[in-house]
Image (cartoon, rainbow, N blue to C red):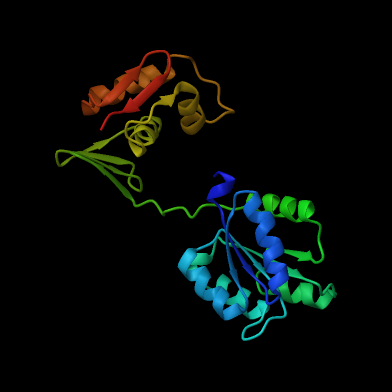
Amino acid sequence: METENYKILLVDDEKDILEFLSYNLRKEGYEVFTARNGKDGLKIAFEELPHLIILDIMMPKMDGIETCTEIKASPVLENTIVVFLTARGEDYSQIAGFDAGADDYITKPIKPKVFVSRIKALLRRYKEPQAQPTDELVLKDLTISRERYMIIKNNQEIILPKKEFELLLLLASKPDKVFTREDIFTNVWGNDVIVGDRTIDVHIRKIREKIGLETIKTIKGVGYKYES
């Protein structure tokens, strides 16, 4: 993900701190939102779903610990990185922050370059929420059951050997995407397994023979794709 696509929420009751941090983050291309207390911060967090939230600990209405606890309890924010930024360096406040689910802790004052560097490093940890795959992948007249390792075509069940099934599933999982031979070897056989150059071609031929999938196209010199 490009830098400018990241959303960052700053929550601090000190206006000068918000302006200082916002300026340095926006200069790097981040989309920045601000709030002066935990309650307002939570409202913005649920509306904007930021990738990273920076929280002061001592704030009115709702402090940083309470706010972090609420964030971490929400399924829609479970991938959001939470960082505490505070002048309090005592061990007990850091422990309380980590116990509430914080991912990191930054003590202020902090130099702008150091602050931005820390934020960039933290955002490299961010993982996009992954949709849970359903058991069945449906493509026109073809259904692929991951759980049963079975193909259903025109209401007829067809059993494929494991590698043929995994190869078909890989191609069909992203219709029209061209998978290189290297992609296929890595995803189906793994980097540690050595197979002959013609292995993929043989498996593709067998799949076509059994299922009649004219939709698997050969891209000469590159690899294969499942054409939708």
